[in-house]
Image: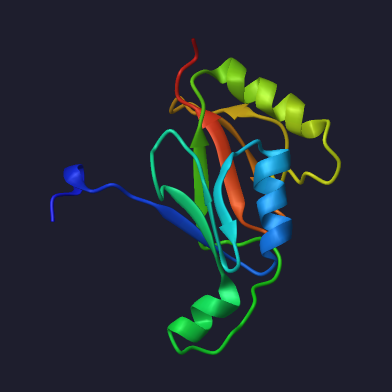
Length: 137
């Protein structure tokens, strides 16, 4: 397999599909392509099936594993949402800060010596979203 020719999709497993779709659609502003039953797909610049959700319970059943819901902040992965410029990162932080219930585990945006400016948001089920940019202007 040649990684340069592979399109990658990210799926998060969720407990409460309606609540999670609502957060990503209404709070973050993602448009939904499909939200039926145990599955939801969101439109992104990366194309079809680049970001989607699947029921955690249905997935556990599909792989014949015991269902064990996580607690707290998910420390096994993050999803990075890359914006065009540092100013866009700051604007998104201001926009999300005005919304009730949005959690920022690391606080306000920070610019690191290696050139990334970012902040983190935790979704309602504790998945971490890095919102950042690598372009100052």
